[in-house]
Structures are given as structure tokens and as C-alpha cells.
Length: 223
Image 1 (tube, rainbow, N blue to C red):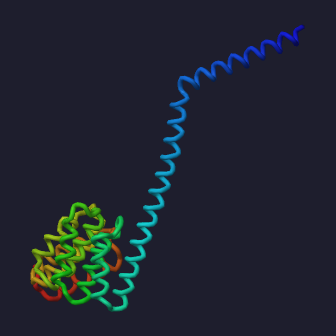
Image 2: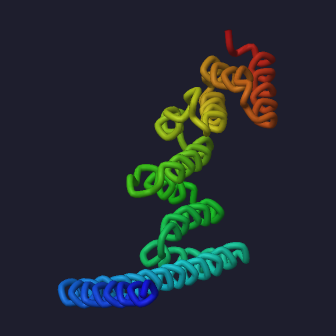
Image 3: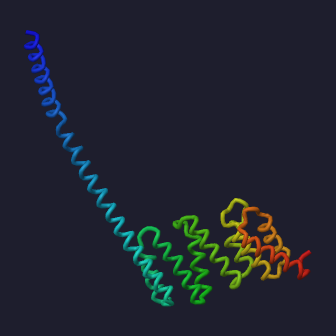
């Protein structure tokens, strides 16, 4: 009798659960189906975007490498044409990398004025990541040591010659060399001294700074 009662109770519970399920499905089934469709469509969309992103990035990367190959082979005009196309149509970071490499090609061709202009423009472009802007300004400054004035070099990199800036050593060296070229030995000595007194200065940069300090001292042109 007990077994029969247990069996009867199980059947009743199963029937109740079945009725509850049918009722729930009737009320909420369309929402479950809609949610399932959203998940399927969302997953498909994400996979599609992921494929498109990888495809675009790969294509831009291949074009960038091809442009670098042209530049390395001495085909400057062809390289610049390829880089110019990437500047306009390049995907992701490749557009700004193309701008940087194109400016470098200008410098390699001997067009310091064009290269300085290109690097300076990148350095002022707020849409470009800060680290790349800083590197571009540094490149412009180093070209200006020979092709410009101390004031022009200072305008590009003096803001980076601060104690906490990662590029301070290169900035100080550029400023020191520009001051030396301009004949301002006092200012040159100040910049080179900042390098030698910075315990984090790379050894090669510190060595060059010390050599310049020795040269300035030997010249007797700085008090």
C-alpha cells in the first residue's frame, strides 16, 4: 500500500510539474525563443566582426611590410606612394605607423625640411597616441639640430626634458647639442650636466654627455 501511495504521489508531482512547465512555456516561451535567437545572432555577429578585424589588420600589415621592403631596397618614391595609401586607408595603428615611416623616408632622401614638417605634424595630432606623438617630436628635434635653431629644438622637446619623462635623456641631449651648435656653451653645459647627474641615464648617453662637458671645459667658453 505504501509503494502504491508513493507511486501515486510521484505521478501527481510529475503531472503538476508538467502542467507548470506548459503554463510557464505558454506565458514565457516567446521570450525564451527571442533570447536564444539574440544569443545566436550576437555570437554570429561577434565572430563575423572578429574575422573582419583580423582580415583588415592582416591586409594592412602585409601592405605596411611591402612598403618597408620598398624603402629598404632604396625605392623611396614607390615606398612613399605605398605609405601614403596606408595613411589614408590603413586599418588600426597602421595609418599612423605609415605616417611615421613616410617621414623617415623623407629624411633618408635628404629632405630634412619635409621630414621635420611631417614629424612635427604627427607630434601635434591629438588623434595619435601620446607615445607616438612624443617619438615624432623627438625625431623632429634631432633633425632640427642640424637644420634649425635652438629655439625650434626647444619648442619640440623641452617639455619632455623633465625628471619624470621617459624620453628626458634624449630630449636633454638634443637640447644640449642644439645649444652647443648655437654657441651657447653655458646652456649646453647645463643640459649635459643634467644627463650626467641623472642616475637613470643610459650609459651611452651619459658617456656622450660627459665627453661634451669635457669639450666645453677645454674650450674655455663656459664660465
